Image 1 (cartoon, rainbow, N blue to C red):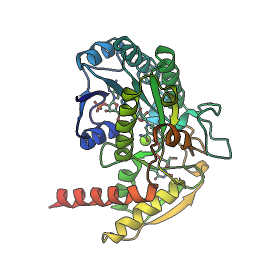
Image 2 (cartoon, rainbow, N blue to C red):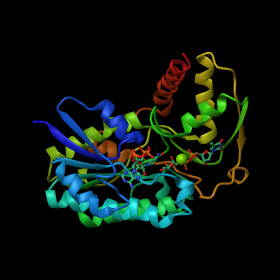
Image 3 (cartoon, helix red, strand yellow):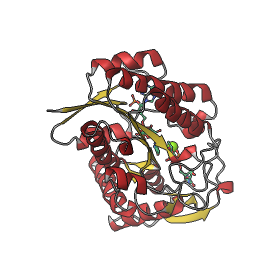
Length: 301
Ligand SMILES: NC(=O)C1=CN([C@@H]2O[C@H](COP(=O)(O)OP(=O)(O)OC[C@H]3O[C@@H](n4cnc5c(N)ncnc54)[C@H](OP(=O)(O)O)[C@@H]3O)[C@@H](O)[C@H]2O)C=CC1
Ligand SMILES: Cc1cn([C@H]2C[C@H](O)[C@@H](COP(=O)(O)OP(=O)(O)O[C@H]3O[C@@H](C)C(=O)[C@@H](O)[C@H]3O)O2)c(=O)[nH]c1=O
Ligand SMILES: [Mg+2]
């Protein structure tokens, strides 16, 4: 029996990674605008229903963290209200719902990696809207797994790794913040994990341990400056010119949105319940950088 997974989004990092990594016995149905438009929440349930899914995965979101500060209502509708609509559709269909969420639901003041039951306290409009999404999902159905991940990068969409490789084309030094700690997480690893969680949820419909909030980032930890250094080192290994990282403070890189100083996530609950452990961040980052450089070289030929 094929497991049909309806996924929201089209060009997003996680949805592209899922489409690339579909395991045997699974079908991924990606849903996009205008059929499914999270900014128009009434489109959500009909679009999901028409996919006849066994599981719903809500990856689509308003992810422009700085821009969200100037359009918080739209962020709230897309990330909050529409997530609730997707979960209500899952409840009506009697199927599990997987919701992607973020480290940005925390204020970042804790001095250890965050656990699932630590107090949330978003300090950005994006973070607040994603927390609203978590609450809307939990209110709509108990049959959910909310996966909080962080610092996603991949060969797809927009992300920090691509930004650094672009800057490296024209610069020999980049200033990068060294006082925000977290863990860069590959969308491809996230995709693999989502398939495992989806199978677990459908196979063990009554297991409460599989349901609720889970933290899911790569193993290890880093500050953004470490990530930039690792990207430039890999680029250099592939023949690129050296790029220095100037380690700066958040105060020296002003942005519209505030970001948590500590974004580290303790992922032991996911390992225990779902037996999912993501690889060390360095081991997934290197092949991603290599692939992006190959793509770049192909484009230049
Ligand atoms: N990026 C990150 O670093 C992190 C992200 N997350 C969360 O993980 C999830 C996946 O993130 P990621 O893959 O990076 O997201 P991306 O920013 O790469 O992609 C966002 C996706 O959302 C879709 N989307 C945006 N607005 C709408 C809308 N109104 N209607 C329908 N679809 C819409 C986009 O559609 P289209 O393809 O049509 O443009 C796109 O597919 C999100 O829920 C995000 O909040 C959590 C932690 C870190
Ligand atoms: C481009 C650049 C960024 N930075 C800093 C800004 C910021 O603190 C950090 C990362 O930049 P980004 O723009 O990738 O950050 P941001 O878009 O906030 O990334 C976040 O996206 C949302 C969707 C999430 O859910 C989070 O987990 C997180 O991944 O690096 C520099 O210090 N120097 C630079 O040259
Ligand atoms: Mg960004």
